[in-house]
Length: 325
Image (cartoon, rainbow, N blue to C red; front, side, top):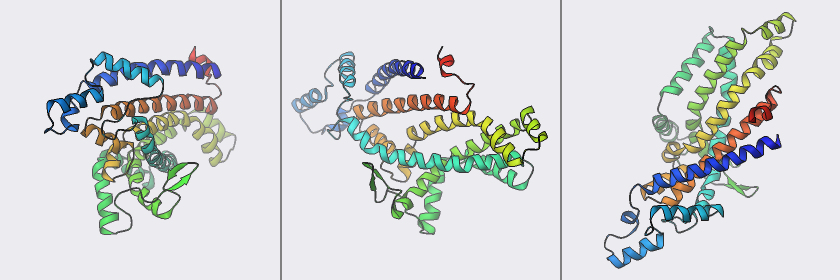
């Protein structure tokens, strides 16, 4: 296990190095932030000083080497718009995004697995058909439209929940969270449900398919022949054996929830990383864009590592050392 983790971390360094070059060239080759950040009424001398201050007067390859040297010491550059380190700006917004992503993933998992099992165990019953119909709607409806409809219904028409913002926060282990207060929880419900809907539908369909397949396997038939209760057959023999693909999807989807919560955060004015990256793109704040993308890549790498470790816990036949070899 330690050798596997060390090997994966070394591979991650190579991936981050390649991605840094790809992201840097892609972002820095598009547009000119000077046109947005500098007053068009400024004279040429002021524009030249601003360009030099932002480090944009150097060739692209030299800018990348400077960025790489600073990144190795933990400095991903200073925001053009806010004049503070980009990593600091992103880390300030990260707790809000992580809270939203964790809540949405928890909703999807806690509802998706039981509903998928129900639909898989009783596919011809009306609850099973209703569950699958709902999952199709969850796949089909655009996230931005669902968010707007949730605001119209629960915030505008019924007035039960706020339409946007994060609400009051409470410090927990040095991190600001909103779910510990009732008002903060009210602000969290709508964006979390909106973000969870697609993931919920995906987990339902994956769990149902795995359940239908597992029920046909010999080990399930043998367990029933031994006279085991239906709850034990489902809980031990069915659920345990379908958890590896479910864990894979949950891990990857959790990373995508963090990376692509942009639409939900924009609709509900949630002050997370997604809203920050949209604002940064609008003003071509290159250091923030590059830092955000590299952090997202790092998150996916860590999630994939965690999923591989969970594999070995769920199924002892999975040997990490053998995989690495």
